[in-house]
Structures are given as structure tokens and as C-alpha cells.
Image 1 (tube, rainbow, N blue to C red):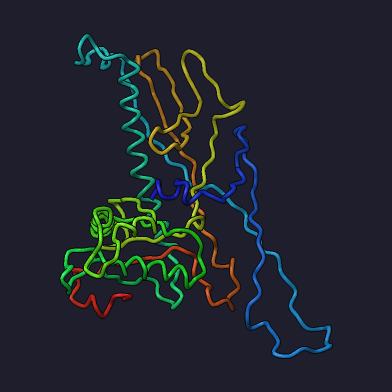
Image 2 (spheres, rainbow, N blue to C red):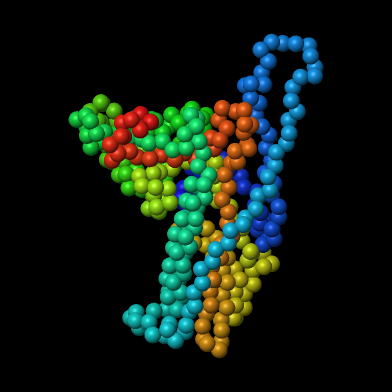
Length: 321
């Protein structure tokens, strides 16, 4: 989920006004929007009455970054002296290895928290459903083990119905992962369709934790741009400090590119380095109030929850196809 939200697909066309302008100081950012006009507001005839019509009300929301996570580790110089690497591992290598482990733990924790927030913000389909079952694999014809081309067509059709732009970003694991992999192996199927061409119709991100949060065989189809990860850093600008015994700065996770606030203090009494990684972040989704309640797509925020029903006896009846 982290990779999907930080992907070029999800960020293209999005300009984020930073809460932190790069100096470590926070400022208030307000999101402003106006409502589109609903079809029900159209008059069926023309009149000379100048008193009709509604006044547009401006809408705004203050954006805050409320979450902060941290990972802490101590580096004891006595332990570092006893390393078993040939001729002794360099201190820098040892610390770098431990910090990569800290990054990984933070990413796992952040990913699971994000999945919970995505689940809480799942939008509706155009027919009002909040989850739809979909059959990913052929199970009745001679192409029994092949991926169904109609499955992707059905997902894209849900985006088309809601007039949502961009390639669907699919996040999931297990059955969805098998489906995507089988597409990449694909050539022509029994119906004469180029299965491999389906790979150009969507983006896919593997997340082994998603089903533990959503449910077995479930996955997410995300519209590019509707959900964003927000960050800010404390230890930049004049707030970045360092000397022989402590450091306040920013360090970048080489895998995700996320900038973490980094704190280090050396305790000369115990010959120990105390280090912390801190992450100030939040998750933003286009609010339901962005559309007027009279709109036919009210509540459709571009986050769709699907369930693969291939292993369910009632799949044919439950499937969107």
C-alpha cells in the first residue's frame, strides 16, 4: 500500500502544498473546493424570473498531520567490539544494517496502519455496493486455468461508470497476485484474446498484509490521486543540529524514499549510542462532502473493495460478471 500511494501513477498531477515548507516549521494548509451543479437543478423550461438559482457555498477543510511513530535502538560499543565478521565489521556497516532493519519494521507497521485507514475509507460503487465479488479465473470452459479477460474489463467498467480517470491501481495478494502473474505469461486464449495485453490496463502492488485487514481473497482498486500519504519533518533547516555527542537530522529510507527524522545521542558513561527514527504522517482521502449529496456519484470516492470469488460455490451468482 505504501508503494502504491507513493507511486508515480498515484502522484502524477498532484501538487501537495507542504505543511512543512522545508524549514522544520509547521503551517496550516486549508483545502478549498466548490460543489458541482446537480442535474436536478436544471429547469425544464426557460423563464424571465431572476430570483431563481442557488448560491454556491465555499467548502474548506484544514489538513493536519496527526500521527507520529518511532523506532528506537541502542548501540553498545562493547557489543560492537565483539562482532564476528572477518577482522571485525566496520561500525558504520553494523549500524547501517541495524537501521535498515528499523526501516523495515517501520514500513510494516505503517503499511498495516494504512490498510486500516483505507478500509475505513472504502467508497461505494455506483450501485451503492461497498464490496463486489469478481471471478478472476475461467472455471467452466476449455481455458479452465486461464485468467479471465472479462475480470479486468469489469473492474475498469466500474471506473467508467463513475467517470474516474486513470489506470486502476490494484493492491492485494494471493488470488489477485496469481491472476496478475498469469496475465504476464499470457498469449492468446481460447476466445482469441491477447491475455498479455491486459497487463497494460492496470498497475499492481503486492501487499501480503491486506487480506489480514480486509478479509480473505479481498483486494483494493484505487483511483490515481484520490488518496495521498502526507509527511512532514522536524529536523530540517535551523532545527538540524549535530555535534560530537548528538545529532538531529533527516535520514531517507532507501526502499520507499520516505524521509525520517533521526535522533542520536551518545552516552559517554555507558559507551552507548541511543538512536530513534520518527515519522510524522497522515492519510488523506477526497472527502464525501467534495460532492453534493444530490449527485449520483455521492459516496463514490474512487477506493473500491473487491473480493475474488473463484473458490466460493456461489461465485457465478455473486460475481459482478
